[in-house]
Length: 178
Length: 178
DNA sequence: CCGCTCATGTAACTGGTTACATGATTTA
DNA sequence: TAAATCATGTAACCAGTTACATGAGCGG
Image (cartoon, rainbow over all chains, first blue to last red; front, side):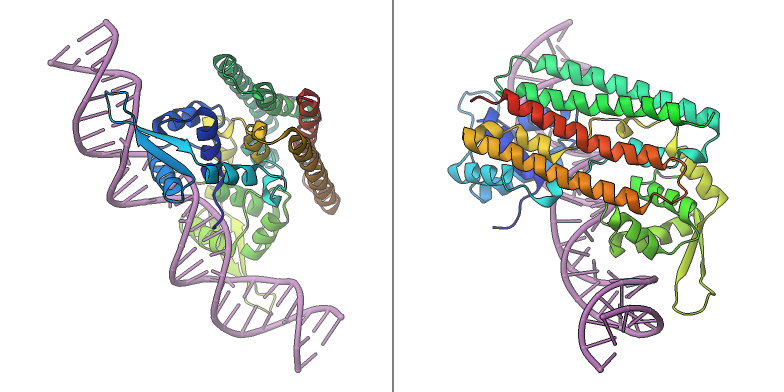
């Protein structure tokens, strides 16, 4: 019972929620997500679902709805149990940390730049975040009518994530040396 | 001039700020950081600094201060230029996204659990975040007297990151079905 | 009929990880 | 003198990525 990766368990969750579904559907879901954590590349997903099937966490049948060959995956009882265990509680230590933010790792060295460029950086970062927020909102609208019971909570997380960093940058601007 | 990884550039930054320093110092810095993005494993750092040296972004000398063999790295002008380019502006698209949060990917499927366990999950997550916040504050104290001009901004980011997610979970609790 | 999307898959690579090995120095 | 820490490094592995290849079905 070797430990599964975050992506494996997340896919398990997607199949639970949206299944039976094709690997392609999963890929699109990952690709369209405002988060860029996973690319949803074919090279990741197809071997992954095969692996999960081999471990009897998923099972598949070929779509009898006719046309194109398409493999439909659904979650098994074992898969459900695994998914539940992954969600927790308990939460593994490394599921709860300070998130990784490339802006943070850059701002750390901002004093390497001349003052004017520092201000330019901050405003560039803020407007880039605005764009991300727009993308998040767009994604929300698209999925507003999905029957995800926790949709609003999920959605709120993405918004907050971007918004708090905007605040942070605004705060940072006031602290810059003039 | 192939693109460098985030870790490579971040290390470049660390050497700029704290150099001349040994790879071991860099490792400890990464290991002690409240962020778990990078482990600071030997297998990552030693080959990395060699690579950067081969590209003339770092240069090294052996510590003449006597005792143990220790290789001291410092940043070169080329390294500085690379570091500046990495910081930006412009910011690469994938440096500005919704951050990845394992709590978010789990909460998405929280409705798989019975209501009681949902509440248990939320409170577990909140107390785990409290612990993280404590670790962040501890780290801050340790580095309060470092001469990082942007220390307070950096520090604030980690705090905000954890705090906003606490708020988010509190908000989520009120939205759970009773 | 051309190009786009649906759909599945593989091969080569990469940027890390864990685990291990070695030896000097410091501390209990 | 034993254990912990400093310091360097390698080898095997792993979970992803990019890029490519294939082919069916559909819209202009």
